[in-house]
Image (tube, rainbow, N blue to C red):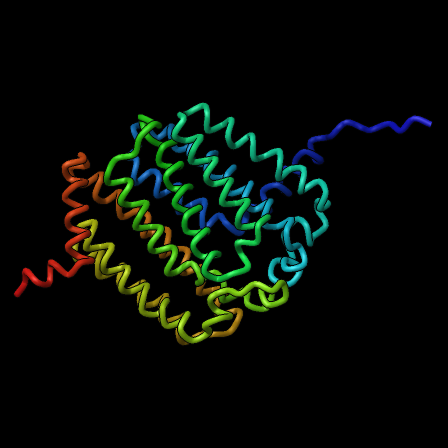
Length: 317
């Protein structure tokens, strides 16, 4: 008896495309939008047409990470995120695994259309994805935060290359912006873990909120306002915008400190995502409203060093 397979209809194609989208849905606010904004701000763009290939590059790399992450511990998503494709039954674990390993070479091939440097950025992203998921880099809180921060930096570096007129190099200003984002992300990324404590305990993850329940909130409560002020100083933001950004940082940090239920942490995480996205726009303030040449980039580097070394305070005396 011969089994006949009916061709896919438009409704079937739409179903599968939506399933793929659901793998990345939760990262739209936390990664896709912030990294795209960062690339636009740091490149800077030669033409608005460069936005589309940048979004595609960022999204495909987020997708390959999310596939690797979600096929690893689908039981965790049954607790934390039951609407994801695997716990919702929209795709089998076998098919999701096949898709995970099909996307990886496609990311490299797409990067090769731009430059060799972008291929290396894609490859680094995939190597750290493998370390984080297949090699259990996410099990320890220190390696988890460090790997995520480095991958975020790789995404921003790659996104900036894909948005630039010259996809083979990033300006000094762009490099500094990536380094600052890695520092900010490393010290605040555990904001996303507060709402998932229950599921993380179930899978044996040792996240910062689980290991240091009080200290982790203090770091965020104080860190967001401090980072808000430092970043505004580094990028020479006007005083009115600085005041607004610092006030918002105080608001978000205060929520994490004072409101500690799971529902409150979910909402606070959304506010944090907005803060994180806004901070990605600050390099654009410098690039588009100041002289963005490497000479000016050198001035920013010196200014940043003075700020963090305390030299600016010493000059005041």
